[in-house]
Image (cartoon, rainbow, N blue to C red; front, side, top):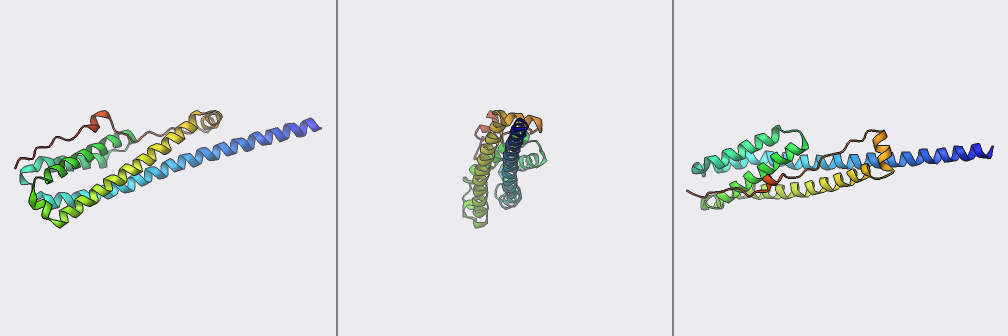
Length: 185
């Protein structure tokens, strides 16, 4: 009879251990999803600011139409992508185009004197920093989650319940290139 109770106790411990690991994996997965939501909030903020900045500078940058068109095209591309890897590349492209626009704006003293434009630029730079912090948090949480999926014994529970890996929100090497800017008037 004692052997039956020992076996039942051991079985109960194994089940409790499995439940703890399952709950840790679910917590890690939800943390990653929450971090992605934070990135989305900041990206939405950037998407909303860009049309205002483009409208504000369009009149000043009549000779720089291509720069403005590149920003608008990059925004549309970023809005239309869904996969994390593609979206990361599109967002990096949009960041580069915005940096190019800011660099061109430096050559126009009238723009630097416009309070509305400077405020929009400052908000966009602030949003870029928030996106960078949110991206870093997301990638850290993805790394923790992926580690849990790969280490023993969590890997047993993860494979039994089909926990799927998340992709990093990282830039391709070609997306890390600096924008080409010509400040000709």
